[in-house]
Image (cartoon, rainbow, N blue to C red; front, top):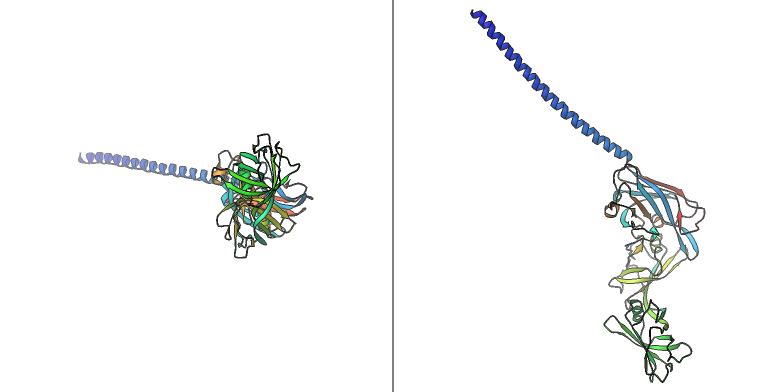
Length: 435
């Protein structure tokens, strides 16, 4: 009886043990399944990430949509290629590319240069000529990178002027003809352009005057001496001119000219100038971007102790030396004419394509809906940019006709934008397609 009970109890214990083992196996299987599921999920995500990175590496990059060149023209003569604009797009499927990290390689005539990012400009509103875009640029007279041949500070150089009383460019506030022992004319104006001319007049200067006023008796223009130039303190300047002959009808005392009357003045306004001449290719490449009438800010350690605005008065190029003369709007900035020495310096700003020089290129945003280029110099889907290259500064010389040029814009990752072309057989216009 006891033996039978023992055997019965033993079978029950074996069943419980089997159940425990089964439960343990289920738990182990569950844990293993969880590990496998987690591992497979991780591997799937890793594979997806790796695949995406691989796809981006393969698809990312830049492509060249075209290259245009700027031919320097002076007078009627076309010289050689001095600047280039390379138009760049991102590849289809490309990840965003930071152009600040890109390098531009340029090869010509056995010389290869590497240019870095300098700055970005916004031309998304439209631009008729990307080569005319301006940006700040400094030159230093004593800097070996941009040496000049001569720099002259010129005091009181004469400059002709001609104004018309009714001309919109030079309107006057009041013009009065005065008859007396000495006939005179008083001209008052707050027009900025005319005031600058008045400021350049010196007491004792000779000015030729003509007018259609009815009490003007002189058959031709008459000479007058500058008696005074007065700042009225209200924005108006007054010029008093005395005639050496009787030119006003003796029946009148004072006559204020009406809106239909005109006065012409011809004479010499004395202006201070700075003239820079250079044969250095890097500096020439910068100066050639300036045109007559452009405004340039100048600072020097000689006489010019604060920044002063100048206006480009003239340029001269003989194929070797480029000379530029700038007139100061401040007529008393230079006290005596002199040629600067090697220890003297001049800083100038506001040059065309400033920042595109012997070591750098400029990025110009042409199409940039999300402003990624304008704000951060990052090019992505749908963007179009122009890379401005001052090739004369970078290569040290202009590129003549029938010459091979190659280069590439290499981003931090992805394929580069490649350019390769031969310059035209003849330069016949300022802007020419190269690729």
